[in-house]
Image 1 (cartoon, helix red, strand yellow):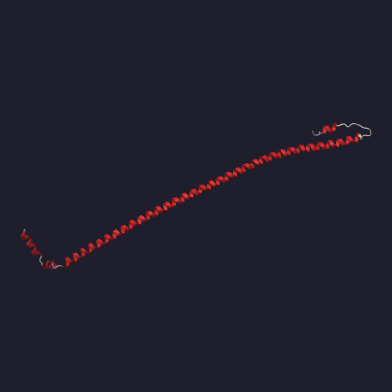
Image 2 (cartoon, one colour):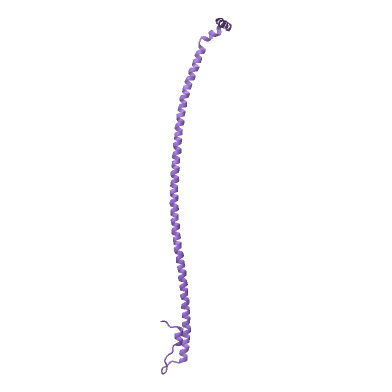
Length: 167
């Protein structure tokens, strides 16, 4: 058990034959008591400081733990966001490819229909041309016959008389 300043103050030495000077011993003991009290006070203050430092260290350790957890959560969230963005971009690309395929297929289909329509119109134009040519040729043949000359030679009044007589 450590000595207290009171223990030092109350300490009494036995006196021997030619012992130490009592005043000198008491003066020395008083100085030791003062110094010892200072050491005890400093020790107490240092213990309080250590306790405060331990509290602060505990506080900072808690903050460090919280920050580490926050960093881990932020990293996990970033990875999750990255993963979701990758998935979403793949879906967007797939959708765009499907739309592009659909548009290309529709364009090809429309192109085929138009080609078929053009071919049909060409056939109709050939048929029309052939019919028109035949009609024109028939009309030309009709114009070039001798029937016209007979018509030009006949008198209209004679024809009217003939028609009236028949009735």
